[in-house]
Length: 143
Image 1 (tube, rainbow, N blue to C red):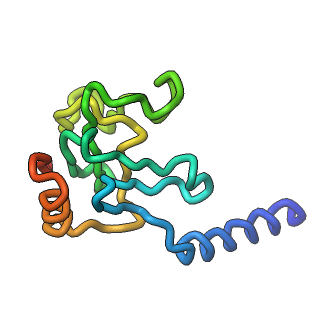
Image 2 (image 1 turned 90 degrees about the vertical axis):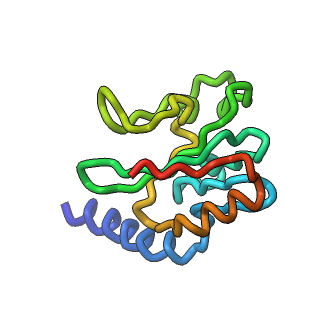
């Protein structure tokens, strides 16, 4: 049992140190659009950049139980799929709460929705940045 648990525990401890110090982007709002950082183990494959011409809205909400805060980017209906053929997990509709979620836009897909367990967002700065780059896009806090 020790032969199995020691390497697994060592790998877990290594990741607990390396991931936070890697300085990877979790969320960025700039002239290119909204960048949503990906899974630390598959960062390049799961990071998404949503250009401003595809952004229809930005939503913030809290999931109960657990009080986890989420950010979702509503994309235009004519935006291209996030995965080849539009059949991958990133293109699935994201519903956190059953049967009547408080998220008004059913266009919130898994690939453009992020839980904010490891970082926080200053709502005023987020709204200011979005207004600066895309004045017609609103940031809606559903809390």
